Length: 141
Image (cartoon, rainbow, N blue to C red; front, side):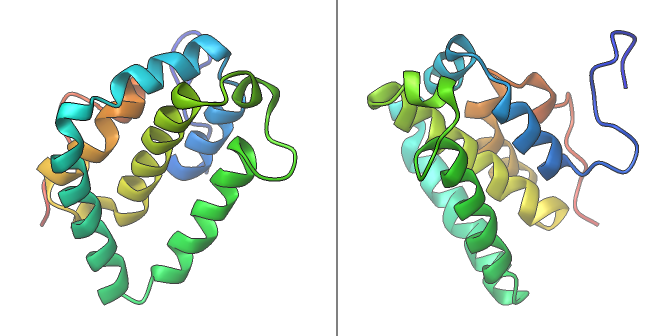
């Protein structure tokens, strides 16, 4: 936790922090996440996404991803989405949602995912949540 009281609470996972922070994003924060979703980077993001999904499937964790993805879509578009996400519905909301989903996928895959793919998946959402891209991601062991 930093001096302003912001940061991960004791016992809080990065995924829980991502979901909590996503609930409190303003429309401006959602726009920043959407700006991070650079169409020129989509091919690299999709390759990283495929790698993360393969990793999860190989470790029988595909169901975890399905559950997490459904939780995220519940915040952003299904049922009663959060007010700020409803306000940014449309292209901006969809790009921000993609950024949120890929960041969650990277966090779920964890350190087993190669650092370049991990960074590619986290980068778009880090425009709104800078903690997602620390200076150096841990290397695989």
